[in-house]
View (cartoon, rainbow, N blue to C red):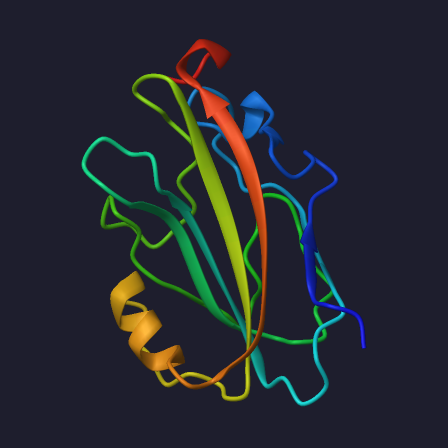
Length: 153
């Protein structure tokens, strides 16, 4: 069986994220394609984070209870049945890259889970990680780059 993959038509792994997906652009989520979800997966979870933020890890977007057969997350939308958790700004929505200086990595992590999570939308990334513990069947990631000099501030 092939390994689960997360890709985007908007940018390649370890390449620049186009400005329209950043805080200086339209600040919308990019299209994400999901391939080779393992059989028996009950739901998917997605976390987008910046490990290079000045004050430590910064969570830009968390979504869970995504249908395993969804195939893709459409640009500028969130799957209807899913739950959007709180990002580091305290909002239940996508927050695009906005590096204050230098080049930052923005890592989209996709998790295939053997359960549908019973977790409220008030949950944080930490609470999501606790709920997913021992339920992860597969993982995939996609890293995009953004620099202050790209127009994002």
